[in-house]
Length: 176
Image (cartoon, rainbow, N blue to C red; front, side, top):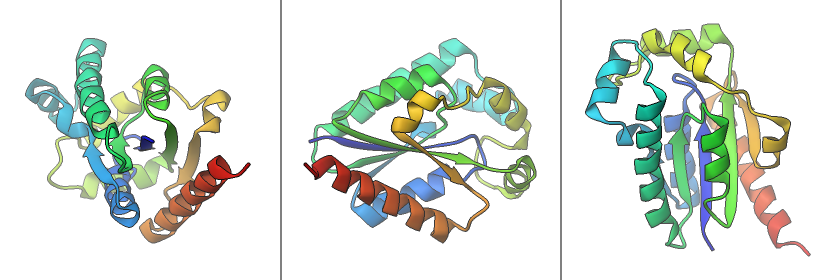
């Protein structure tokens, strides 16, 4: 049975760090959605410019190809993914037999601080405004599979809460 865990949020929310830690904790395979951006898209974002819908859709298609190939295994796939667009979130929700999403939210000042301090990543603080503009809020109907997480908590606290929620969902899926 295929299983997908999607950890979402704008740049600076800690999705990659949490997704890696989550994958390690549950024995899953980690996928970094940013790795599937084209060099052109990364160069634009490094300049603080958002990508257009065509670039975003081509990136998402490449990402889905990888996710689909990994979902054929029995190992959970844990993905760090911005999740800015509802259409993309909905497509991911239908990808696997079991899907759990976590959407990382936080105070703008905390996110700006994290982005200012971040190194070795193409998406810096200059990209934040375009990501906020592109972000489509999680709808009530999506809360069936997406759990909001407040990034004001520590990494350890958030990871523990996420694993607990995931385990509860696992139990609920197997209960009669």
